[in-house]
Each structure stands twice: as C-alpha cells, then as structure tokens.
Amino acid sequence: MVSSMSSEKKESWKSRYGVILAVMGSAVGLGNFLRFPGQAAQNGGGLFMIPYLVAFLIVGIPLAWSEWALGRYGGKLGHNSAPGIFSSVLKSSKGSYLGMLGTVMPLLIYTYYVILEALCLYFAWSFLNGAIPKLGANSEKITGFVVESLGMAADGAMFTGQQTTMLVIILFCFIINFALIYRGLSAGIEKFCAWAMPLLVLCAFIVLFRVLTLPANPAHPEQNIVNGLGFLWNPIQGDNTIWDTLSRPGVWLAATGQIFFSLSLGFGLILTYASYLKPDDDVCLSSLTSAAGNGFCEVVLGGMIAIPAAFIFLGPVFLSDPGNIGTFSLGFMTLPNVFNQMPAGAFFGFLFFFLLFLAAVTSSLSMLQPSIALLEEGLGLNRKRSVALLGAISLIGTGFITYYSKGLTALDTVDFWMANFFIFIFATVQTLIFGWVIGPKKGYAELSAGAEIPVPRKIMIMIRYVSPAYLLVIFALWCKEELPGRLAQIKVTEEGPTVALLSLTFIVGVMILFSIVIAKANKRWASEEKEEPS
Amino acid sequence: MTTAGWMVMGFAVLGMSSLLGWCVYKVVNTPGSSEHLHSPSDIDPEDD
View 1: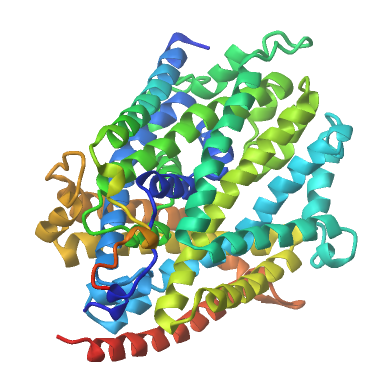
View 2: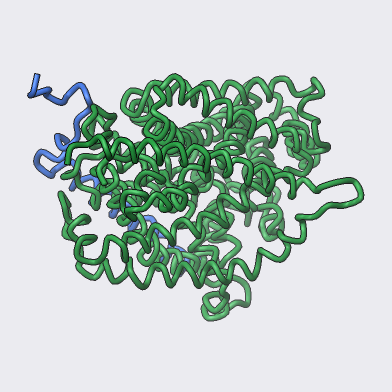
C-alpha cells in the first residue's frame, strides 16, 4: 500500500547534521540533567553504570535502530504518522488504530511538558531579576516559591490572578513551539535545533566549569568537589557490596527506564522524524550519533553538575533523602538553593535554567510533529489548519493540567499513563512489528540500506527476541510495583471523582478524538489507493 | 572519592566522549554523506 502522498512533494530534512541534531534535541531534555543524576545516586552510584550500559546495548541501540528503520520504511510507503505507517506495514486499516498511541502519547506529554518548559524559563528569569536569589538558602522559602509558581496549593490557584507571569510564560512557550512547528520541518525544527543544541552544550560546559572549580564548603571542608563526585561515582557506598546493589531488580528497572525515556524511544517521535528521510539515507550511524550525543549530555554533563554541586552546599545527609533528589525536587527545589549559595550564583542559576529551557523546547517541538503529520496526511489539512487544530487541542489539555494543579496530581497522572505505561506497550509493539512483521531478512536489508557503519547480523536476533523479552520482563516488574497504587487513585469519593479519574477520562477523550481522526484518515487513504494507478 | 570511583567516572566519561567523537568523525568523514538529504527546494523537478 503506497499512499499518493509519496508522489506529492513532501517535507524532508535539509541536511544530515540537521536530522541528527533534531533527534538529539528531542532526546536531550530535563531527564539528562535532572533525572539521570538522581537515579544514579539512588541506585548504586557508579555501579548504576553497569545496568545502564547493559540497557543501552540490549534496549537502547536495537530499539533506536528499529524505530529509525521502521520510520524510514514508512516514509517510503508515503506516510509520516504512526497510524499511517502501521496501516501500511500491517496492510490493514486496523493497524492504524494500533499506531494511534504514536500520536496521542507525544501530544499528551506535550500538554504538561510545556508547563515544565515554562517553569524553566520562569526560573531563569527569576534568577536574573533577583526573585530567587533573594530567597537565600532557605529551603522552605524556595519550596514556597515553586508551590506558588505552579499553583500547587489548590486546584485553580493559577487562575486567581496572582500567577499572571507564569501563565504568560506558558502562553509564550506555546507560541514559540507552534511558531516553529508552523515554519515546518526544515525551516522550523531543524533550524532551531541547529543553533539551540550547540548553545545548550556551551551553557552546560560553562556551568560544569563553575561546579568543578567550586571551593570546599568553609563550614564543612569535607564537602568538596572531589567528595561530591565520589558521592555520585563511587561504586561501593556504605556497607553495600557490589552484589547487594546489582541483585536489586529496582536498580535494573531504573537503568532501563532511564535509557528508554532519555533516548525518546517508544514515543513515536523518531518514527515520524525518520519517515522524512530518503530511502537510501543512513539510519544506523545517524541514530548511534544521536544516542551518543544524548549519552554525553547525560553522563558527562548531567552526571557532573547537579549532585556534586548540591553535595558541596547541602551535604551528603541531605542528598541521601530520595525526596530531595527526585527529578522535580532536585531541579526546582534543591538546585535553586545550591545556586543561591554559590558565588555569582544568580548568573549560573540563570544559565542552568536557560539550558534546561532550550533542552525542553527541542524536546517539546518533537512531540508536536507526529500529530501534525497525522492531521496533514490523514485529513489533508494544510499546515495552517493543522497547526491551529492541534494548538486548540493541546491548549485545552494544558489548561486542564494547569487548572488541576493541586499537588500536581493531573500532571503526574498523565505522565504516569503516557510516559510510563503506554510507552512500554508502544515500544514493544514497534519492535515486534519490525522484528516479526517486516521480518528478519527484510528488516536487516532495511537497516543495512545506506548504512555507513557495519550492521551486525545478530541485531535482528536482538530485535526479535532479546529486546521484546527484556522489555516485557521490565514492564511486568514495573507494573507489579507501580500499578496497584495508581489504580487505587482512580475512584469516585464523596466529593466527586478524583483528579486521577478526571485525568484518565481526559486521556480517553483524546484517544476517542484521535480514533475519529484515524477513521477519517483511513477512508482518505483507501480512496487514494483506489485512485492510484496500479 | 575512592580509586574505584575515579575509575568508574573515567570509564564512563571517556567511553561516552569516545563514542560521540567516533560517531561525529564517521559522519563528517563519510564521503558525500551529508548530500544524501535534500530539502524540497533542493529537489530538481526533472519532469518539468
């Protein structure tokens, strides 16, 4: 099934470096600078690198290669969206509904990610205008600032007229994202990533240099940079033996999750990005370069900034509390405290949150493209209309999450189901389709087409057997650990439905909406196929 | 920081940097690799 889209002039990347930087930009986000160090510190320090490396080889590379190759193959069949690609590859319109997750997931993740993106910009601005530096090293005041910024005290708090700046910044981020998406793949996303990624890395190196040259804490001389690095990288910590750490399933789960989320695998983003490649463009070296760039930002930059700096000013006891080094708390509560105590902290705080903002924009942009691709190729909408329609849908979503802000429950619920639960399912489906539907022979030929590095033959064994089995085991363990608590939140109390239930209803609503879009798209593709001369 | 800590950090940092360096070297030095991609404006409308 080849859509007539293939015969029309369609979008594509302008340069090899552009696509690599765009995929790298999609992968490099808050997780590299905030999630990785927290996960490593909580899960064995230096020993965390063993399961991290295993996950990189067993899940990261095979999944990245299969997603890139599947996307380019879909592009050859004339499709850029996951529903279109799946319907063509599976030769059934039912397949398109399976691909729905590849558009709904990134869109729903965008609805809350843009709020965090705005928060990064708000923090960068607040460091510059002195609002955060004047809070000093007072943890309570900093926490209060975060609670107030996001209206976490009560639902609807953001709309009481006291948080106008934050709302304006959210709107500003919305406009930036949609303006860039409107400009298109090459003139918008590619161009932006081409300067944003180097700038981001430059900012990170400046902050890293500052952290590595920090003097020891005068009150506690043992709190110095060398011991700070040791807190994160020492493989044996406390009384734990190597075996104690590596025998904990949670450590493997955390490392796989980190690789998985950090490389933007299983979201449908790479699938769409790769569909704009030409049939003989390399996918193996490009995806490996993007993964390596992401790993560099994570391990070299992310691993040496947040935790060592926090160690110097806040000490090992503070960092031993997992509540202080979770992604959100490390970024928006612990680190502002650190920058407030650092010489020239206002400047470095600004620089750090500005780099987080850039990382967030390059990621959020990629979350919109899959839905744009579906609206354009499925409904035949032009860029202006598809951007307007998607803008309206995502604005409703962001409005919902911004309104139900108490304790960030709505944000947390959408994040759980989209960026944790469904992502595993979609990644497994993608791998199975590439390994079993396209098959080992054709799959290997697809991977090898245009490849600029040797592709090991055994990669198809990994894609067919090892990666899906590993994913399913990790998913089962994760479900056992996380699902019961989450399901218990979905209920109707005397006060009415819980926010978790409302959030899930919202997710289902978006899925129904996209099912309707896909049904219309299927009709369009079927009629195009009839018109296509055989 | 223990000796093992220095070694793990060294391996991790050097490993990731080397992998990225090698990839970038391959991308830059593969003849014609950057010309594989074309934007719509670069495509020659040969049937015009």
